Amino acid sequence: MSSQSTNKNYRWNFAVNLLDGATYWFGSSFIAGSTILPLFISKLTTSLWPIGLLSLISSAGWFLPQLFAARITEKYKKMKTIVVGWGLFLERLPVWVMVLSALIARRLPLAALILFMFCMIWYVFGAGVVAPSWMGLLAKLFSPEKRGSFLGITMFLGAGMGALGSGVSAYLLNSLEFPNSFIGLFGIAAIFMTISWGFLALTREPYGEVETRDLDFRSYWGDLLKILRSDHNFRKFNLSNIVVALGSMGAGFFTISALRRFDVSDATVGLYTLSMLIGQTVGNLVLGWMADKFGHKLSLEIGILASVIAFGLSVFISIPELYFLVFVLHGITLSSGIVSGMLVVWEFCEISRVPTYSGLANTIRGIVSILAPLVATQLAQSSYRLLFGISAILSLIGLLMMHFWVQEPRWHASETEIS
Image 1 (cartoon, rainbow, N blue to C red):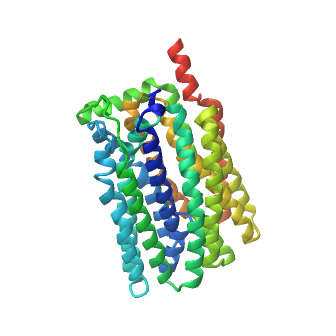
Image 2: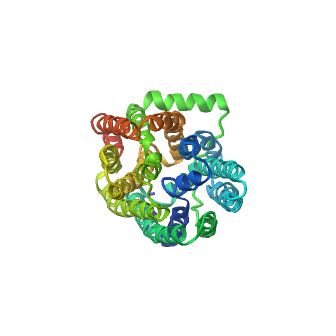
Image 3: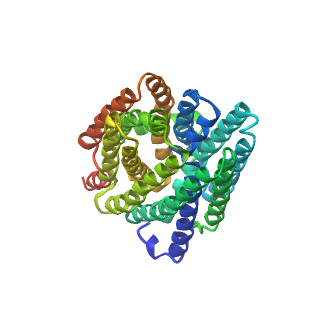
């Protein structure tokens, strides 16, 4: 792996995966889960429960399938078999079907809501199934000292294009009537996310021998328990991450809080997306660079701190303009979670175990993510300030656990090897 950067395919793989990430994030900005999608749901129903269900699907649907998918992934020597072969149907096609939910939204709002939720389940769970193989592919393509910069630059470019996309979103939401605005948003998302799949398919995966595992379910679960028992630092990381996940439960209600408390316009919601992407853009570039130099744990802690501040600020907001700062901070949190929250897990293990370690960590978080949105919805019905206050406290506890209890795996692993 140390010689990957000089491999003849390194520049090619860097370029096509960079374009994949950039076009994917541009497309996904038109279906932003924290802004655009809650707004769409609010047009179909006055109930808060679909908003909570959206948060549940977005978190649990992404995290939960990964542990089961990891067992399948480790049977394959070529990750592209799943990433590209399965990815078109599991990740891209449901976004195209989502356009149909907007087409019927005016005449059949309940049917549109049901179809939309079905598409979200299909899309997010599909992404969760593909995720371990995609992580395994990136681990093969890029060495540890290159991963943070690659993903940071990719997300920086993607968030930058997403910021442009959010400007387009704001224009469409302001100039077109419902549901035409969402037909346009979902259609653009589907087009660019399909283009990203085309770039991903151009990846030249290394052909070197990779250790594969084909364990029965009993042996596989025994292997997972062994990892949690023997790898103390990884276990502490997961326990800290559980508290952080609980703390993030209020993030899905930032937009709906602004809508209910200040009656902000649809175009303002599009600008909230822009603010979030500005935070992601800065966070991706800076935190990705920091992670390569100082390890992913520090970058992850900065993202959690941004979340603490965002929730704390939300408790005391008295004017809608302050939500722009909340979404900037939320964007920083998202960038930290995507770059370092994912890559830090890879440094607890060897490359061949990346799918299993990633699946284990993400599924543990996914189990928590089933409960958190339900609790958040109940709290939101009582008081948004109460929800954001509890989220701030839990996020702060998770930050303290991560900082004082978990050791940076890159340096900790090196010390273990030396000893």
